[in-house]
Amino acid sequence: MPALLGPWTLLVLGGVLEMVWAIGFKYVGRDAPLWQQGGVVLALAGSMTLLFLAMKQLPAGTAYAVWTGIGALGVATVGILVFKEPATLARIVFLALILIGIVGLKATSSGS
Image (cartoon, rainbow, N blue to C red; front, side, top):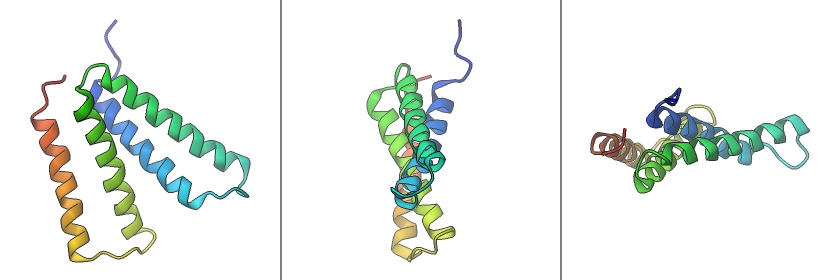
């Protein structure tokens, strides 16, 4: 039975969930409502599960680098746009380099 979603779609969705739990770790404290804590745990579990499934068809190094890159790029971008973290020229350049790395890994991947 063919997979409903391709490995790259799973990987991108996993990267997005990585952003959710990483931001959740910072902003959902020990005294937060249980539903918020549970949401962070579910995002973490979902992110790892989607990475696991994507790695079944993609090279492990490529999948892991793209997954962490999506998370890092996304969290930093949300930090700049939503939480008013510094948006220095150097920071923007280095975030662009992460994006170039993600695109490059996709373009040169031998996976599906």
